[in-house]
Image 1 (tube, one colour):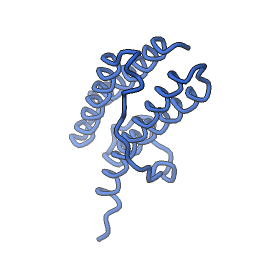
Image 2: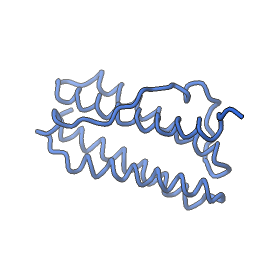
Image 3: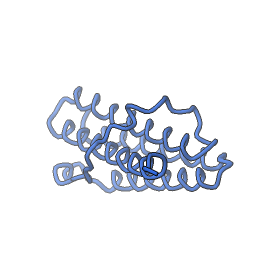
Image 4: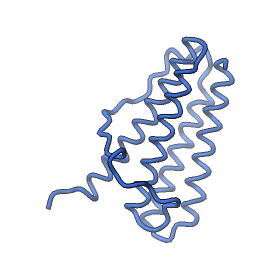
Amino acid sequence: MDTPKLLDTAIAREVAAYRLYEALADEATSPDVKTLLTHLAGQEREHERLLQDLEPDAVAAFVPEHRPDAQLTEYLREAPEAPTGNLQDALTYAMQRELEARDAYRRMADLAADATTKALLEKLSVMENTHKAKLEELYEDIFMREA
């Protein structure tokens, strides 16, 4: 897949994530969950805009923020199907979605036909992992604080 098509695919993924979080926020019964999901929808929208403005020739210059991966998500219970119940479920759901997005971009990078496409996919994977890491930090601050 060439880089312009790859960007279109990545943008479509971000749009789908934005729409999902927005729809879930509309259904949320908890104000905290609604706020979190609305915030996540906004972040996905920012990713969409970033990718829309990224010219294929600028892929090499694109450097996503990087945070260390605590891998908390990998050790939590499975995420609920829809995070409308409570904040802990919403965070678990969101972390799992970001993990899935990260892994999808990694798998796509392994299949990339050229170095530019591979580099972009790896950068998108880092971007999603950073998203996950931020959510994990929030989860730890709220639910894993020492008394």
